Amino acid sequence: MKTEERDPWLKRFMDNTWLLLVLGVVIPLLSYTLWGWIELLMIPPAPLP
Amino acid sequence: MSTVSTNSAALDSPGADSRTCGTTGLKVCLAAQRFIKLNAVAALVFLLLGGIAAILLALTRWQAVHLLPVDWFYRIITFHGLNMLIFWILFFEVAVLYFAATIPLKSRLFSRPVAWVSFGMMLVGAVMTNVVILQGKADVMMTSYLPLLAHPLFYLGIILVAVGTLIAVFNFFATLFIAKRDKTYEGSLPLVTYGAMAAAVIAVITLLHGAIVMVPTFTYSLGWTPEPDPMWYRMIWWGLGHMSQQVNVAAMVAIWYLIGYLAVGAKPVNETVCRGAFILYILFINLAAAHHLLVDPGVSPAWKMWNTSYAMYLAVLASMIHAFTVPASVEIAMREKGHSRGIFGWITALPWRNPGFSAAALSLVIFGFVGGITGVTLGTQQINIIAHNTMRIPGHFHATVVGGTTLAFMGLTYYVIPLIFQRDFIWRGMARVQPWLFGGGILLVSFGMSFAGSLGVSRRVHDIEYAGAYGPAAHLFLGLMGIGAIIAVFSLVAFVLMCVGTVLFGRKIEGRAMADWGVAESTVEAKPGSLAHAHWAMKGTMALTSVFLLCFAVYYFANWKALADVWPVQ
Image 1 (cartoon, each protein chain N blue to C red):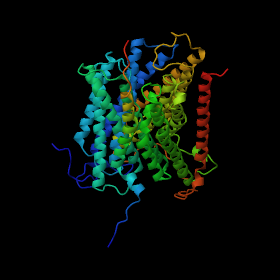
Image 2 (cartoon, each protein chain N blue to C red):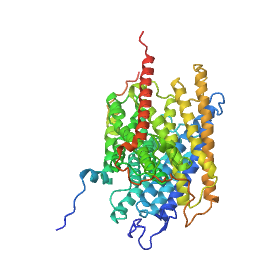
Image 3 (cartoon, chains in turn purple, red):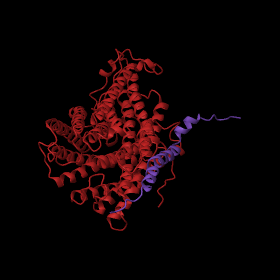
Image 4 (spheres, chains in turn orange, cyan):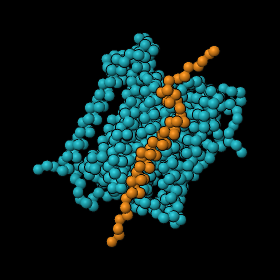
C-alpha cells in the first residue's frame, strides 16, 4: 500500500496561511491592544477640583 | 447574486479569461489585470496630490521661505499625511495583492464584483476625505487626535477606505483559497506571494484597529455617542497608523525579491529562512505601534518595553535577515554569471541603468541604513525621550516610507506598466535617472529633518521663530530639507508624468516582449548554479552588513551619549 509522507511540521506551519492569519491577528491584539486597553481602564478617574 | 464562481481557478483551463504575457510567458488573469490597472492609476493620482502637498509643506518648514499661512499649513499637513501614508500606499498595495495572488499562482481572481465594491468604496472614501480637508473642515492632521474634531465625512471617508481595503484583502485570501483548492500551483506559495500574504495578514489587524477607532469617533462627531477617551483613541489609532506602515514593509520586501529576480535572476539563498523572516513580521512587527505611546502616562513601562523592545526585536531580526538575504542572493547570482572579481566586483557589474533595479537597490539601502537604524534607536524608550515629537521622527519615517516603500513601489511600476498596461515607457533616459534623483532628494529631506530635530526643532509646527531658540544650524538643516524636497518632488512629478504619458501614448507591445531595461549579463566564465551551497561566495554581502552593523552601533551609542548630556553630572 502506498503511503504519502507528511511534510515536516515546520514546513506545514509555514505553509498554513490560515493559522498564520489567526496568529497574526491574535498576538498583536493580546500584546498591544487588550493589554494596553486594560491598563487604561485601570486608571482611576482624576478628582475634579 | 452569488459572487463565487464554480468554474476552475486555473488560468489554463478552457474558457479562462486570460492572456499570455509576451515578455514572461506567464498567464495573466484579465479581471486581475483590470483591477491592478485601476488601483495603480488611483495610487498614482494620490501620490501626485501628496507630492504637491509635500513641496508646500517643505517650503513652509524651510523658515527662510515660510510659504503657507498657519491655517493652510495644518490643512495641507493633514492632506499630505493621508494621501501619502494611506491612499497612495493602500491603492498600490491592493494592486500588488491582486498581482501576487493571480499571476505567480496561475489563478484567476476570486471575484470581480468584490473587487469593484472594494475599489468603489476606497475611491469614494479617499475623494470624500480629501474634499472635506480642502474645505477646511478637518484641520486635525492625519492622526486627528481627540479632542480635535473634524467633520463627520472625514471619518466616514477613512472608514470607507479601510473597509474597502479589507474587502480587497478578503478577495486576496479567497483567491489563495481557490488556487490551492484547484491546484493551480504545486508546493508552497512562491516567495513573492508569500510576502504579499504576510502584508495581507498585517493589513487585517491594521484595518480592524481602523474600524474600532474610527466608528465611535464618527458617531461622536455626529453627536450620537459620548467622546471616546483621548488616551484610548491614541492607542487604537496607532494600531491603524503604524501597523499600516508594516503592511508596506512586508510588501516592499516582497518587491525587493521580485525585482532581484527580474533584473539579475537572483533566487533566495535559503527560502525557509526568508519565509521564517516573513512569519516573524506577521507575529511581531505590529507591536512596534507602541513606539508612539512611549511618553504617554496611561500605559505602564512593562507594556512599553515588552512591545517596543523584547517582542519587537524579533521583527527587527526579520528585517536584518531580509537585508542580508536580498543582497546575498544578488551577489550569488552575479558571481555565477562570472562577475567574481574581488569582494565588490559584482556590485559594479549590476544593471544600475535599469530604473526598476536601481529603485529597489536604493530603497533597500535607504530603508536599512537610514530608516532602520534611526527607527530602532528612536524606538528605545530611554532615547525616545530626547526625540519624541521632534523633526527626528519625520526624518526617520521619510527614510522608511518614502525612501524605502515609495521608491520600491516606483521600481515595480517600471515593470508593471509594460507588463500589465502593455506599453513601453516613454522618456526612458529620464526614467533611468529618476530613482537616483528621488533617492538623493529624500536622503537630503531625511538628514535635514533628523539634524534639525536633534537641535530640538519640533515636528508639526508652523513657525519656529516664535521662541527665538533656534540658531543658524537649525535653519541650515531646514534649508537642506527644503532643497531635498524640491529635488524629490521634481522627480516624483516626472515619474507620474512618465507613467501617465506611457499609459496614454506609450508604444503598444501586445504580443511581444517589453523593451528591456537592462539585466545583468553573463560572462564567458559563467557557471549557473555552481555557488548554490558556497557560503563564502557571499563575502561582499558579509562586508556590507558588517559596515551596516558598525553604523548602527555608532549611531545607537551616540544617542545614549546625547541622552546622558541632557542631565550632565557636575
